[in-house]
Image 1 (cartoon, one colour):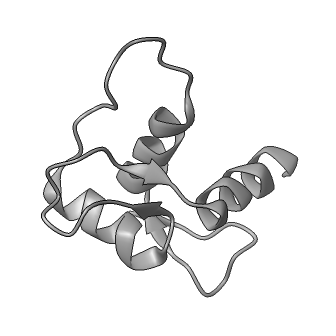
Image 2 (cartoon, helix red, strand yellow):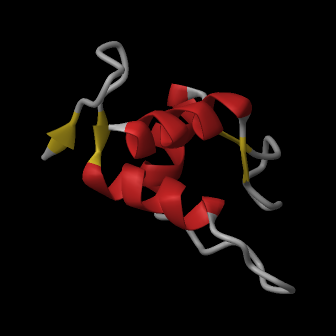
Length: 75
């Protein structure tokens, strides 16, 4: 199951969209939620998150990921 919203070149699974939304939430003093390898790879390939090369550090949302989430909210 995939969703294609306002971004025809980038189709993400619903799991990837959900994960991106969870990463965007404020977490005071807590680590980012753990991501399934395939979801993390999907978000990284789309350019929506960045992470260290070895995947052992924190994952952060890129500007493209933030713009994608803003576009979803505006719909």
